[in-house]
Image 1: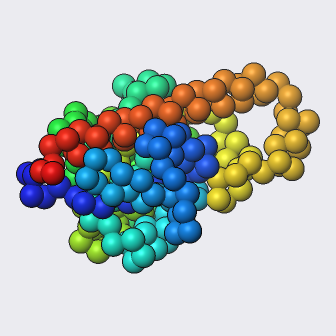
Image 2: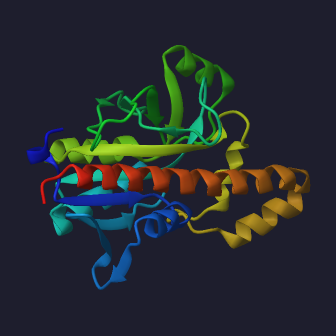
Length: 238
């Protein structure tokens, strides 16, 4: 991307509060009447949450483009890993695929990063081993529930986009039913969590590990996004 193509206003989207909080901290964003805003050098930043899943992600992206006049959108958060990816890896996917439609999307990173691997977006959190193994054979290294929806809106609206995801867990290791422990907006579902722990206490150690790994992954993704923005800002004419 040349200097003249550098964005002047970047919209940042994170699915859950646990992913959004580290992003606010990493970029020192401030909450105002119209949401969270900040700067990275000469680049203006506006940030918000999408909630979980493709429909909410698409709706949030539409709102962001309509209200904030952004000229680049970056989605930041955690993902499930497969194949060669490991917990804690930060990835800048080369290709993002929507499972429901088969559509492929190609990110436009703000600066030179090592883009590699394919990321699959789907709303089915509980992936079976056979499907995972087939995806790995096709070059996929991660799955999430929002990126292709963000990409689809951006490409329809003519807005460049990029994705920063960090691996929080491995597909096939995390029980698929843990998705029910969060509300659609990503906040904890306290009642469901209590029932889950009472009926499946043997899973408590795995949930504790998942929570810690997710926190570290969210922080890693946020810090990588902040570095990308600051590097882009430093190469933009003042």
